[in-house]
Image (cartoon, rainbow, N blue to C red; front, top):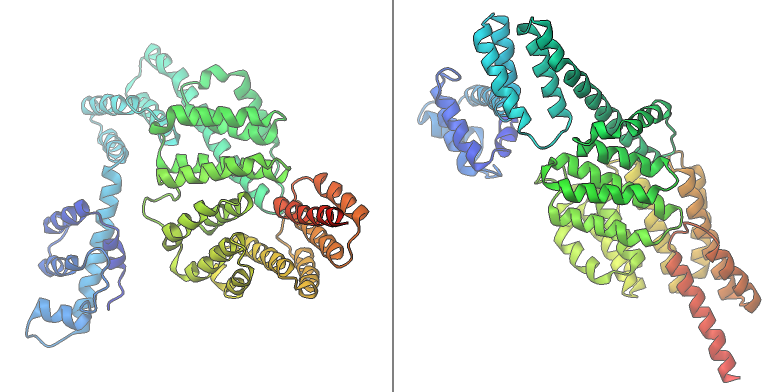
Amino acid sequence: MIKSNAILILKTFSETEVKLFEEFLNSPFFNKNTKVIELYKVLIKYHPEYKDEKITSKNLFKELYKNLKFKESHVRNLFSDLNILGEKFIQYIRINNNYTYDKLLIEELNNRNIPELLGKKIRTLEKKINSVKLKDHDYFINRIFIYEMKSFIMTDKSLIESYRPDEISSKIKLFMLSLMESSLHLIVEEQRARIKHDFGFLKHSLDYLRNHITDFEDSPLLLIYYNLILCFFEKNDEKYFFIVKELLRINFSSFSRIDKKNIYGMMQTYCAKRITKGDRSYDKEFLNILQEMLQLKIVTQKEKDFISLNFYRNIIILCFNLKEVSILKKFIPDYINSISFESRMSVAAYSNAHLSFLQNNFEKALDLCNKIDFNDLLTSTNDNLYFKNDVKKLILMCFYELNFLESAISLIDTHKHFLKNSRFIKEEMRKKNMNFLNFVNDLIKLKIKFDDFELVKFKNKVLSTKGLTYLNWILEKIGEMENKIIKLKVKS
């Protein structure tokens, strides 16, 4: 089967684009090679996968050139031409689907010094832009373009003064949007990795926005970004989180797919922050957000794309923490094929290991953990780090449940070395996992040599520790020990 850049482009075509591209190829302005058209007509029979074994150089040559002697170079040259035309076509589609076409035309009319037509096209574009509900980056960029083009044809000072304040306002809003969006990416990075950023200038900008908040009420996207940032910088952070949720609900239909995904992504980061600080009520809030994204099909930037390992993992771990067996049983078969093929087998083992543990099938969970190949999960250092950490903890809990106490003690030691030696793990995460390992070690000691008084001390220590990972499981094991005491007292 042929591997070609042209086929990679063809695979992305919708049914409408398949027809449009044929029209494009039939235009002599773009293409004068009729053999390219014939090649395309043969290839689209295999749309959209293009995986048929018949797609070989020899088969295509025979279909296009009949009884002529086979020449590989002929087919290779046709694919090269098809690739170039495919690239031109997707450029045209991109230009035609936004305001780029109008802006390029206006710029060219200005270059050709046709002021009468230029003014008319500017007014037409301005009407289009004014009808847009979403005040995002593109909106303000387009507004600024209009103002700049007007300056070429408006020489009367009074006319210039009438739109100059609006131009400055649009530039401020565009700047604020860009600054806050970039800052939100840095905030996410700080939450997930061992890194610190300087947000001094951002804080000055937030003060300006706070003092001129009424000037920004026409831009709900900007207000959402503003309140999202305050979720990480203000003491009363929960207040701003619920403002974000309400603004998103009211303006949801006007936001682009990418904006929706970015907003939900930041809401996830905020929930993770609250959970890390010990507020376990946000486990459910976090899971609800992820389920909402799945229902609305905004998990990825493209409608048809693979789910990120981080998103998938979050659902598994949240369901595990909340003991949501029914959600997990449905989620795994519904979405395992949304994971990239190279990671799918290991992620399936990882998922079902957690499910088996919740179903008290600890031997099966342990067996599935041993089938996970971490080389399959190396899409990023962070992904691999989180998955490794999860699996090590799950194996440890399986060892405890199966009473493999020596193996559990040995694993605690190696896991501590793993946490200490990692250069990427965030200090907060390192401390949280170290606490978990120490507490499991204490559980094992109590299991080997029980002490009533030590159990009470241990329980108080656990309850006073904030942000402890798998807190519910540890409390459940403490509860089992307490029940044994009660039963012994009843018997005596």
